[in-house]
Image 1: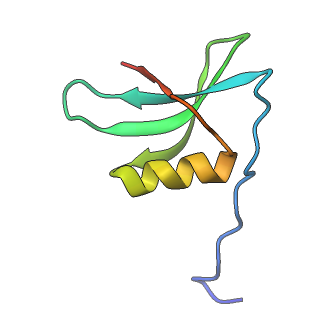
Image 2 (image 1 turned 30 degrees about the horizontal axis):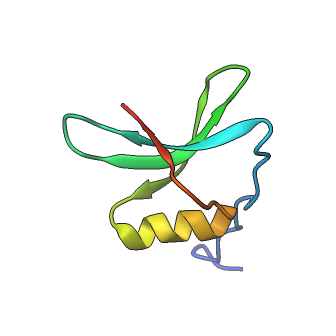
Length: 73
């Protein structure tokens, strides 16, 4: 395979008993990053940059998320 081969897909599942989906939002520049927060440690795990509604829909579909996603600042 060449230098610019297809990238391996990340895991597209998460355990809702261990993590919850959140949007980490910057007050300064408006950047939004979707990811997960571990219940035990409170650690944020970044998944993808959200630039528009299409990106958010892709995040929801990839992980099977329905309902509201909490925003943290």
